[in-house]
Length: 81
Image (cartoon, rainbow, N blue to C red; front, side, top):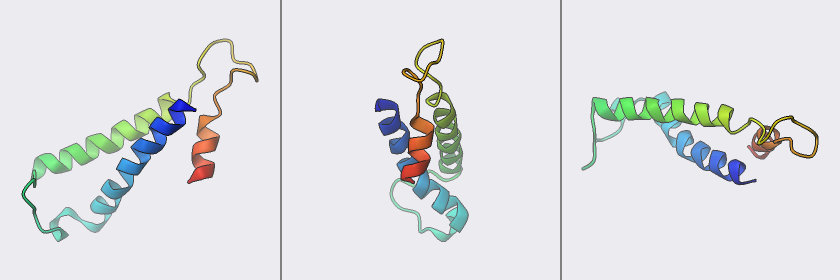
């Protein structure tokens, strides 16, 4: 269950970034922490890292996989969204 909490936290970070990139960064008035092109790069890195964690945290904890030790995190994550 810990991995589900981690992945859902990463997804909560990724949702505003996706909305920002879909709307366009040029439509936002720059604030005091505006990073310019570095901000776009960091947004893309965040989305790639979120995708990576979605995949990696879906793997089972131990081998061989049985019904008792299977990681059901991926199905729970998409059911809660």
